[in-house]
Length: 220
Image 1: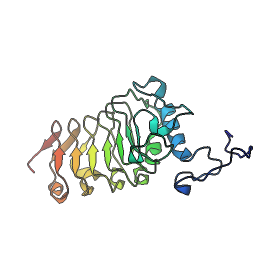
Image 2: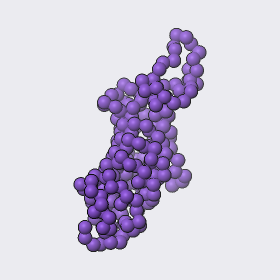
Image 3: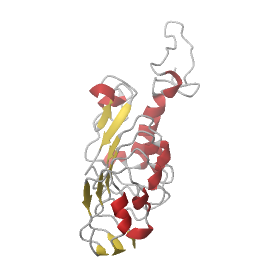
Image 4: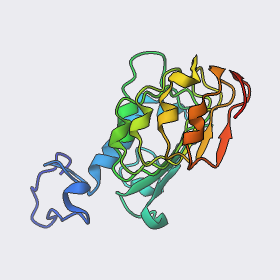
């Protein structure tokens, strides 16, 4: 039933495809219910009723893989588990100015590879991004983010978009230079300052680096 209890033998509990990975808690009501719960909490915390696009969100009868902007394994839309991407750019998402309770929820999606929430008001913090073991693309430009502490824990990240936020600090002091695994890095339209660090040369996997409209000087 709605409490996750078997009370009708004609509706037996079923085994989830990926076992405990997709349903780690007793009393789950769906396979992958942890992912559904996370998305529902994000919707609530980020003012989902006012999003520009929220088709099917919070509909109990629609698999989460069919919800607007949610992408799942192998492109499926009939599953209730396996979220690999969230594409919600320019969607009027609003995390407000108070306590940031939503950031850890993104990182708890166990299969997430791509998060695109550009041009919203979602001031993420990265304290727990290490939980997102599979994240490869992170696009969080234009969200009013001012602190990127902890971001280097995303050790599988290949593409990072931080353009047009409120980041004001010496580039030399950031964790970005520790992320030698990055292939694409976009930090334009911030207030990074100082001389371009020579350590950028150690980022040997980097193929694209965009840093104009900051307070940087020097040559690479």
